[in-house]
Image 1 (cartoon, rainbow, N blue to C red):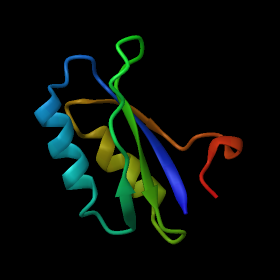
Image 2 (cartoon, helix red, strand yellow; image 1 turned 180 degrees about the horizontal axis):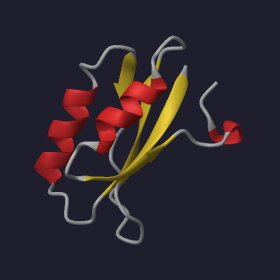
Image 3 (cartoon, rainbow, N blue to C red; image 1 turned 135 degrees about the horizontal axis):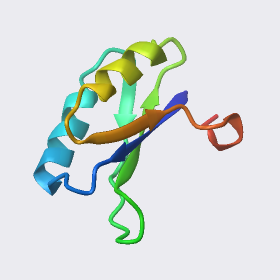
Image 4 (cartoon, rainbow, N blue to C red; image 1 turned 45 degrees about the vertical axis):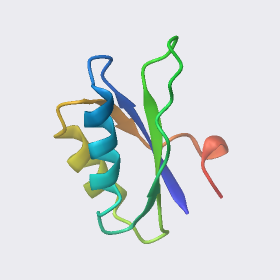
Length: 82
């Protein structure tokens, strides 16, 4: 299993965020999209968990086109889900 860290814009509405998570979970190779943080001290973020064969480049590219996504990256290996 691999993961992608997705950071949302502060302006993202809760219903937009939930809709995005549900949409991502339908993408090929995605196993689960994690729960969005509710910490007021950091921008909202969540992890997307993929199977080993998922095309991470395609997932990152699709995330870039979302209006509410601030950034998406594959975390350093020491933080990755094993």
